[in-house]
Image (cartoon, rainbow, N blue to C red; front, side, top):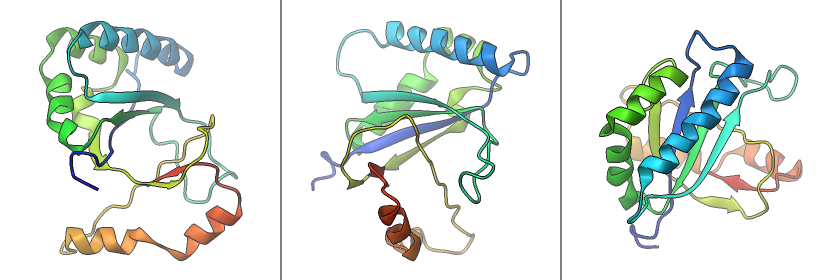
Length: 168
């Protein structure tokens, strides 16, 4: 697969503005999404899909899960070459920034990560998304880190449990 065709994601870990309750945050986030739609305008768009996920208490559901963040924004990008365009959308608009600061604890650009993605199990999207982050230890080569994450024994357990869609 060519780099131009390789899918990517922009993922932001959302914490609500401290003045908002969780319920108010949900409503405010939906309002904020409309600002993004209006500001996107016409022309080539780096975003192929968008999904907002509010966190739930993971106790007893998934070992090691946390609700450290109030939500996660998942933006499917057209390809990894869309990342610079997407970053420009996040960082070059004062109107969007002002609205972000009414919605979130801090600017979205400060809490966004970009990653290439790979479809492991192709199936319908569900109402549940699990996002796993693996921090690379200092001194570990980035390529070696990715190779170690490529296939793990617990992957078979997820597949056996009936994972319907899996994007790594």
